[in-house]
View 1: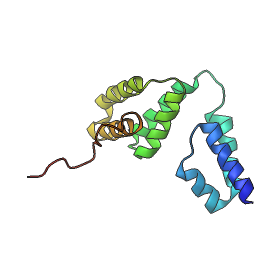
View 2 (view 1 turned 30 degrees about the vertical axis):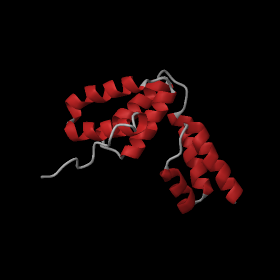
View 3 (view 1 turned 60 degrees about the horizontal axis):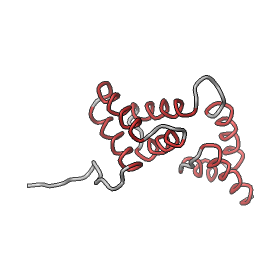
Length: 133
């Protein structure tokens, strides 16, 4: 069973280009069959070939994550996937800045932090206290 679980977790990474803690959680909590079903649904819907290419699809998913003020780690995954599909870090940053006009400063700051962590980890984090007097 452990080998089957590892194969399905590897499939998770292979079909998406990333693996998130949620995938391991589902597998551990509900078993490999639930993870297989989840992966099958992702292949049939999220990754299906259609009129929208993978880059655009990942950019749209990133927008949805940003607008929901999703976790930074989850936004990073989809920024990573968009980048792997051809979106440059600069395109993703511009998308965040355009969105910021409509989604508000806090959501934009979360998105900036996800972008910083993914593409410019050399820049200090946004969410930190720099100085108190």
